[in-house]
Image: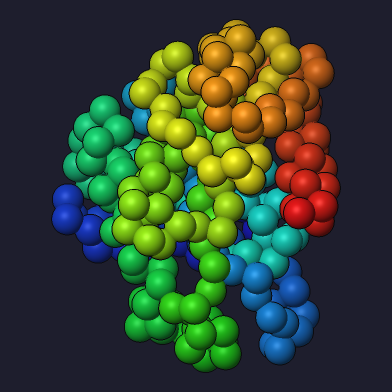
Length: 232
C-alpha cells in the first residue's frame, strides 16, 4: 500500500492471520507524534474475491492514518496466507477479536523490528480502538462491536461502508456510527440499509452516483469520514 505498510502473521486459534499494518506518515516525520488510536478494518466477502487489499479497505486505512490511527487490515480465513476456511462470519468475528487482543499488547508490536522502539508501543493498551468494515466486513465488525459493548469494552467508533443489510443479520449499532452507502449500490440496496436503521435513528450518509465498490468515488469516503470525525 505504501512504504509505511508492514506485513505480518498474527497467531490465532485457527493458525495464523495475515495482516497489513498501515502507519501514519506523521510517525516517520515526528517521533514524538501522539497517536490517536488503533483501527481494525474488515474487508468484503472472502468467497467473492474480497481481501485486505480491496480498494475500499485501503481507503479506510489511508483515511484513518490521516486521522492519526495505526491501522490493521487482516485477511479473513482462507484468504492469502490466513489459515482456516470461510465460516459464514461466525469464526471471522472470533478471529478479529483475537487480532484486536494482539493489537492491545505492547509485546506484540515489539515483534516488529522496524518499529519496536517506538514510544507509543508502551502505551498501546490505553489507546482507543476504532472498528471499520466494508460489505461483509461491516457484518463482522458490527457484530464484534456488539460483543465488545456487552463486555464493557466499547470501541471509540464504528465505521461501516456498504453495510451488508439484507444480506447478513446486522445487529444494532452505536448511534455515533459512521454509515456510508452508495446511492446506486447494486449489491446491497440503499432501502435495505434504511430499513435496518430506521428504528435505531442512525444517520446514513449517501454518496450520489456511487455503486457498491464506490468506483471513482473513493475520495468521497475519505472526505466524509474526516469531516464527520472533526465534527464530533
